[in-house]
Length: 283
Ligand code: DGL
Image 1 (spheres, helix red, strand yellow):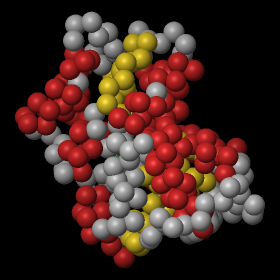
Image 2 (image 1 turned 90 degrees about the vertical axis):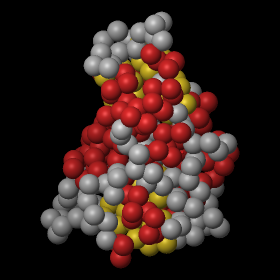
Image 3 (image 1 turned 180 degrees about the horizontal axis):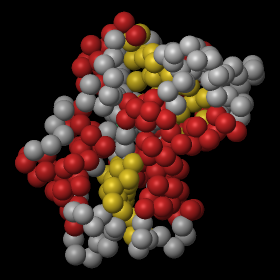
Image 4 (image 1 turned 120 degrees about the horizontal axis):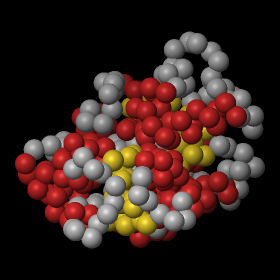
């Protein structure tokens, strides 16, 4: 099927975290229609097996593709880490962008001494996705990755700052603050973590640059829209619509910690994606 320039870009995440990527897309591409899917019924992905996360990602992608999208942004590090290749194999004609490569690129640009730390969910760390992507771009880099799944719950509860959060963050980031850690760059390899940026910055100190994938992903998406001639030309005012798999009220409430615009509950549709058909390959 011919992709149309006025179709939305489909963006999905396990829940609300991907809204940090949606923010960056809104800012970089104000003329693009966006359709966001948060799989709130099955969040978190970060503690699940690769097999489950791949199935969830395939179902989320199938749901968005049914709505006619011109590009898919996998705005979840965990899903990007394990499911990007299976998705590209099923939908070879749809441009698909993940967040791991852009985050790895941002860290390689930021580091001065080649020592890079990564914090992410358990599943992303176990999959070694960032480690692999960073070493692909800079084979001389040294990468230390640490799971911090607890940050997801803190971010969703709106606990972003304050002495108690600093204490938890300091405890989780202990491997990086030990004397032998020489990292000068820390990748926030989970879409929730930018919410805790101030606390993480305080704990890590000024000598460590924090990078996340949101801005770099928006640049990737913009470049890819140009390259594929899919930039929206109609200046009719871009729309952002939302789908969730559970709890639209909670989504709207928690989203206010992550998304800079107020979400109109009328734009949030509840969908059931658990029984959706997954094609073997796109016809
Ligand atoms: N959005 C997920 C990620 O970026 C984190 C939340 C989860 O565990 O589902 O990895």
